[in-house]
Length: 68
Image (cartoon, rainbow, N blue to C red):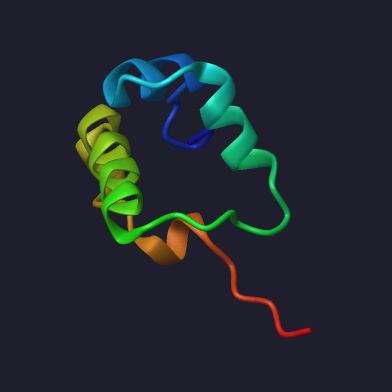
């Protein structure tokens, strides 16, 4: 979101959520259980707010798989 210059508030407004909810998701080391629909809404919101020069946001851009 920082690279795309999207604030917590802007994404929260787009998703009709509270900015603190967006902040909590971003600061988690382990992604809380989020269904596919919620992830899809996050990606769609980021894509809508992003400048087209960044291309489409993908799940891989939002997450990092780490083996234990």
